[in-house]
Image (tube, rainbow, N blue to C red; front, side, top):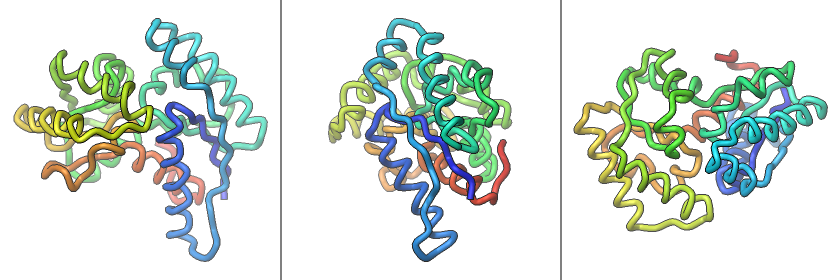
Length: 234
């Protein structure tokens, strides 16, 4: 079994979920007492969030690249970054390491195409929804992306940082997300990407009729399968 290097802590709430999924997938596949071989480097999210807010992406990339180098030195065979937004700096990190990074947006794109989805609504931080680094990776898998309007983007972003990243689950916020999802459906979305690893703490498939794609689950499952040499990097 390959060793998975996790860069986590962004937030630690969703990193916990990654660890659970990795081990459940391995146990379900191999049985017995099997669990995932993994190494975790958990960063201080306050430092990363300040970089995001100030537009200091290179600085945040340096922090994550240092984490990746340490995971490589410790014996990781490949890296997963346990957050969507910070995949913006993947090209910067890749220059500093020899091992591959399993990209969350590409993993999501493969799953969307597998299920016949070619137009999807994207929810995530404002950086993920507004900038191209995430959407372009989906488009590379022939998936068109639509996002909420500016006001709804601000609502989604605020709930992520002010509530979900701090472990706060609000029924009011859940209803707002479902309203926004309904609006994306009316714009032609065939599915919804939960493009922030915390959103799955608030909304899941039972809450809506449209197919929901939780990137945390998709990413962690593909990482576990890759560790067991069941999948190739995409």
